[in-house]
Image 1 (cartoon, helix red, strand yellow):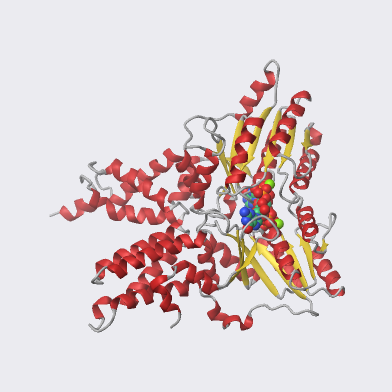
Image 2 (tube, protein in one colour):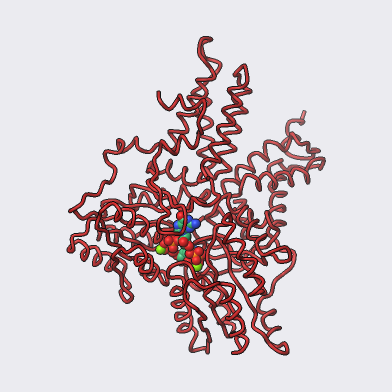
Length: 312
Length: 310
Ligand SMILES: Nc1nc2c(ncn2[C@@H]2O[C@H](COP(=O)(O)OP(=O)(O)OP(=O)(O)O)[C@@H](O)[C@H]2O)c(=O)[nH]1
Ligand SMILES: Nc1nc2c(ncn2[C@@H]2O[C@H](COP(=O)(O)OP(=O)(O)OP(=O)(O)O)[C@@H](O)[C@H]2O)c(=O)[nH]1
Ligand SMILES: [Mg+2]
Ligand SMILES: [Mg+2]
């Protein structure tokens, strides 16, 4: 799948390094070139790639290494660390301690945000079902009053998944629907209330203001940005803007059943220091898988030689 | 003497080495605009070929010469080889004996904006006094039929006073899209509709089962125009998306043009349209620039080139 492809290429470049007897500037440069190409072809942000390259070169600094140093290992470890730094976003919030953990018997609100067509409405239901199967009482609120057929879509999905839902055909104010839906489910002692919102983008200020208002009204315990795995170079600026306005704390990466290598998402993760928590792998309500950074990194780098580095 | 200046400021026969640095910078620039590395490399090769051995103009730096050549290369890729006049083609069928409706269908991957932009095309056709039938052939995604019903209702209200005629043809969910499309066209012909607009379900371009059903669809519906909606947000995957959709309709049928949606969401990073035209030779006719019915434009190639070079 997706990331494995990128991983395979990076791994091949690393293997070349292992094969050559002397590790000199030339070998290092060609390996870095390969890795950077693989990253660029996977939609990783262009600036991010050149920073990565410069960082690795600076850290390795072959000329100044004492003769005793195992150069090959040094190079591998540096590359590994830098790639980790790219996707490891637990650091800022101090690991999983701050991660969202819903409790039964206490209402938690999860709000979905994201660009148009990213897969919010679909992923809402998937997540609702995921929690419901783990014994939580979950309700879905449709606060998308803009898109044609949005409530019908959520309603039909929720019905398929047997998840209670709330929405309105007549109310045009998304803030009002969101508040009413959350209040209803809270009064009925639901454990998790998931709020779906319309698609929006940073270029339209009013849409972002609306998102902030919905957020103020429902006071989410967790805000999730839904991101399409095929997104290209716009990933960084869009996700940064969403981060600033909605302060989302997690990412769901959708359409991972496709061909895309997910590099745009890596850039979004790096730009917002926010972890991916789930991936969407299809259009059906069960096509959702949890996601962990370590898995991501080991997939990215493949196995073999590199594996020993994980355990240091 | 002035050798140094000559080097930078033109009157110089260009070699590959002279161009290397300028082209590397150009490639980076294009990739930042969301042009796929493969496509950016191709463009640089084209530019290199066109310039090696040529003399630069006097007082013209290499960068400027390269820029001009790149603008040319982009313009060539984006400019269609034949022009399409939809309204004219529709009129021709309307006046034919016997008349039949003109059939346009949209295809593309999930969530790119097929249904929304189909509705924008509908609005434009209604303003040109054409009688429209919308066929709801996405029988899979929840709410897809209701989404089109709302659009049809909205559009009717918007154009009613000027005599706009629009109707929805739907058979609910779960049925075969190709059959519904064929029935819709028959219905449209019998009732004197000018245009039948067919919406289809989104599908991943690497999903062989869903992609292969497009061949039957093209055979049954035999649309006058098959429009692939591709979104400006998508990155390098756009190359393969365009290739796979273009190949999905069997050996004797291709896409007719692209509609690139969500151009308002990417600023000047509009490279995905270059990727799609490069990989198929199929032109971009429309661009989507927002979520309203009026947010549809025909592509201005000079606008696109300016965005990409700026
Ligand atoms: N193949 C695949 N398709 C997906 C996945 N997630 C969502 N989709 C499809 O993507 C399309 C858009 O999904 P929606 O859930 O409507 O997206 P949205 O973000 O709610 O869209 P807006 O509300 O219009 O902004 C639909 O066709 C979904 O079936 C996924 O993981 N894989
Ligand atoms: N900003 C912006 N949004 C757009 C544009 N075109 C479509 N959208 C939005 O993109 C989202 C998805 O649009 P749809 O028309 O439902 O996409 P689709 O391709 O039919 O989706 P599926 O049928 O689920 O595959 C909606 O929220 C639209 O409003 C555009 O040009 N600009
Ligand atoms: Mg939605
Ligand atoms: Mg649709």
